[in-house]
Length: 407
Image (cartoon, rainbow, N blue to C red; front, side):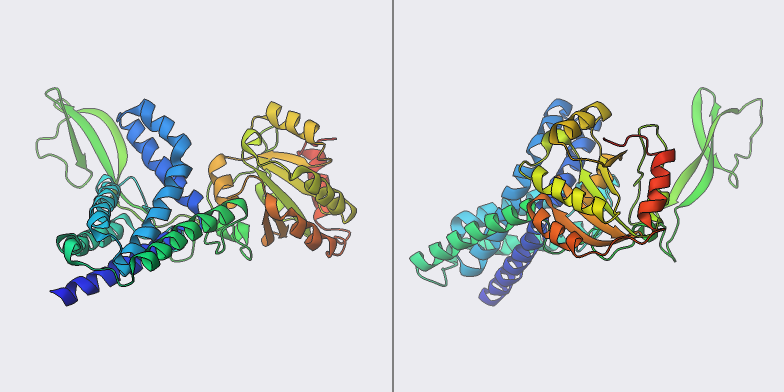
């Protein structure tokens, strides 16, 4: 039995540390997933006021959960204070099992975010994983009083303190900069127009036409090949017809709902992305929540881009009045303003703001506001856009439709 408990400790400890580190690479990803859960529960009528308020604390919860997951994994491996951590592990896995079970049984989530976006698991796979972990943790819990620490008290405490500090430093760094490993569809090297298409070989949703009729005051559903034997227009009264989902497919593009619109509501996404040459996208999800201290460097970048005929676009979900006021206050110069839904902005830019350099539609550089100095050096080394490139074609586009050019 001791051998089984040791194996369980090793598996649980390694898996918790690995899971925590993968999520620590992108704490905002877990925060967004938590907000998704809060929104679903609010829409379902479960404490809607409280759930909406919880949205504001999602990132704090995310950082704490990730840090605790790493610390718990280390504690299990070194056998540190297992009487306490036995309980904490059990409570944590019960919480995770509830979330993954809900995600699977409700059918409202494609992924539960257990391993972040780098290792996407289906809700069913995540639920099974947590059930197996629950069994292993129950074994550890039952033997928690007999588990002795591997190292002396001071060494074990030191290891735990180092784990705690490093977990927070790691998360602070990626929140200020960008994830070390970008697993999202807007990563460097990706072709955005290509990622907006459904992948070859994808399986579409399988649906069947379903009819709803009323008979004797009750609604009855049936398909075209299973009409009731006593069907008659005098008995059955038509209510509606709809497509009933039989099997969920995976025919979705990696990048969806990415639409860049002018102040006039004109969709200019593909004309901009497919134009030749370089272009800059400055993603600013919310002007009121943007970081500070980046504006001066951004002005230098935009001036340098202008000298090289590289067009710049500010992509935002902020209201037009607010963004115009922001541009006037910060004096960012000539930059075309395009509106976009906040969801794809959050996917493209984990930091607010984030700068992306593209050549045609391919991302060749990506920097958070904390690394705008690196962006400036990169743009400084770029040769001028050729004559009939993005500068020219986008310039024509700007005259016709990008009528929100800031002077």
